[in-house]
Image 1 (spheres, rainbow, N blue to C red):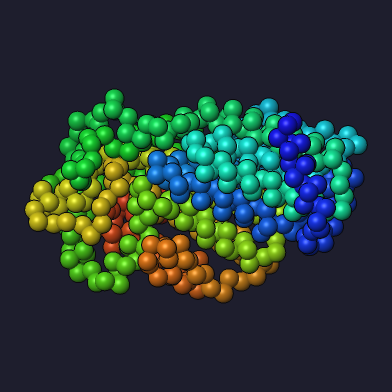
Image 2 (cartoon, rainbow, N blue to C red):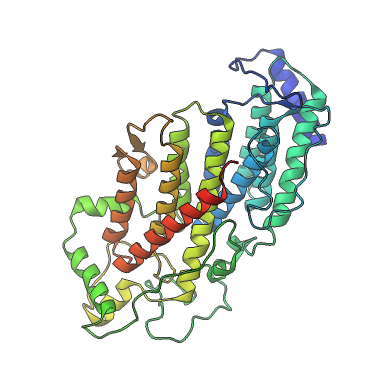
Length: 448
């Protein structure tokens, strides 16, 4: 409660010098005071910007770990608002592992639901990110600023403290649940030394002298999925060095394509590579685009809450599904096969990630995320006229423009092909699985 009172003191100072917030209309329900009915672009998007910035400061937060943070962040955002938005049911029973979530006491008591969400997300990020003084300062600062900016004329201290306390209680319970999913603290054990790849033909080998013999996060294949199933996993072609085999032909197709690649095609592959250990992560890249689209609003808070929830779940489950495939079928990268059987001088234009090849996780996650964005921004919402992605401007890469989300997805899938790090069958399988993940998420997280 000391943290709550410190926010109240900061709020009083800001309120004394005035506030320029837009006019908001209280929720018509007597137990709900929602100062953020049209606040998605002001509250939720700033928190996703904050989370992405914190994640980018931590090289140990590999793509699957970043996606897990976004998944639980979406759960916290949605669940903290659900009791203040009629028609938005609780996630208990719809998201795996969620149980015994605290409920607000709305018997004659009002809550400022935007501030519930604010405190829930702040508490959740403190518990899910690796210790970092800069991230802590960023989170604390945004939490206090959001309280101050949204405390309009109604200065009900009891409601403020009640809202903040409920948000933190909800986040603490979600953190307890997250600690049991198999992914907790994975940043400290990215390459577990006791893991051994199976002794099978065509098994993955390090593609660089700088890599050890253990691939990235083999334990992630056992992390709990939150909304999807892992049934009907497509199998890759059987490994073979026979020139007449499908596997050999797939490797040769990669070799021939890269030999013909032009600079424009390689620029696209470079732009979407989002390499391991360097900012941003691929999930963060996609979240930047989603946040940009949400800011074309205004949209009600419920719109943003559902969209961020679906995206987080899709990316998390997508990475778990991809990792299940990678360690069920731990085949070598094209680079390894080509150098051994086709051209010993072959080098791909980009260094492959330190994981088994099958399936393409970028194809899987991008397909799932783009399909969810397409559902969200279909009619009756405004048409998307142009998407300008500036994620890598700071790295010296030019922005990329897209007229549609289909065009964006096509660019990502083309980048996978021109990167030389995947066989075509792996990209196709990833895209197929991504379509399935999106469909399952949209069915599971549907409004009643």
